[in-house]
Amino acid sequence: MSRDVKYIGMDVHKEAIVIAVLNEDGKLVMESIIETKASSILQFMHGLRGELHVTWEEGTWAAWLYDLLKPHVQQVLVCDPRRNALLKEGNKSDKVDARKLADLLRTGMLRPVYHGEHGLRTLRELGRGYQMISKDLNRVMTCVTQIEIG
Image 1 (cartoon, rainbow, N blue to C red):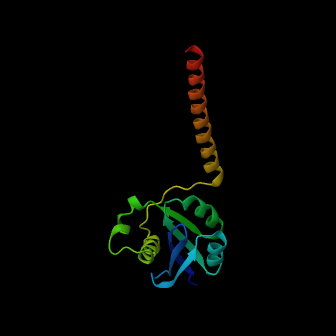
Image 2 (spheres, rainbow, N blue to C red):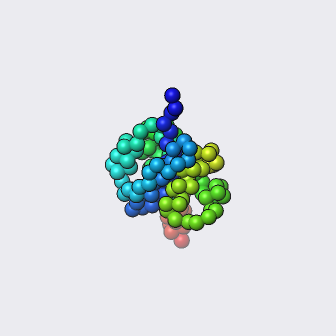
Image 3 (tube, rainbow, N blue to C red):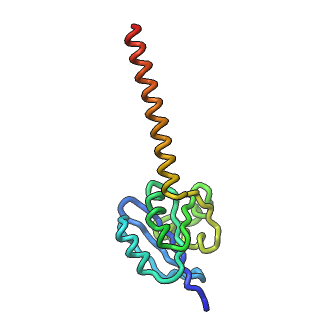
């Protein structure tokens, strides 16, 4: 029995996402444009049948989208556009980019960017915040000391 695998390339923007869905043979089975909203994205994914493999380029929405889709699909691969030279070849448009991403995912030609579990990302953000607050505190204390001395 054949698996029903779908490879989904997403060109993500603030207002909308252009999506291309390919089957195992690389045939385009669906194209769509949906709003960049959790409910719309999940509704689209739930409307697809089979084993879903999804990719998009690293960007502003990558971490949010990763956390949203990871529990609902077989594979999520966020790729680094600077390290995937094949994305730069040929015509450029949102539809073309989404198709290329789906095809490169299908053929195993994408280089992933690490997107770990949400807990690790939160810890990293908290650590960065602590460092920034510590630097700010040192700067304020230095200014206060200089004012008292001066």
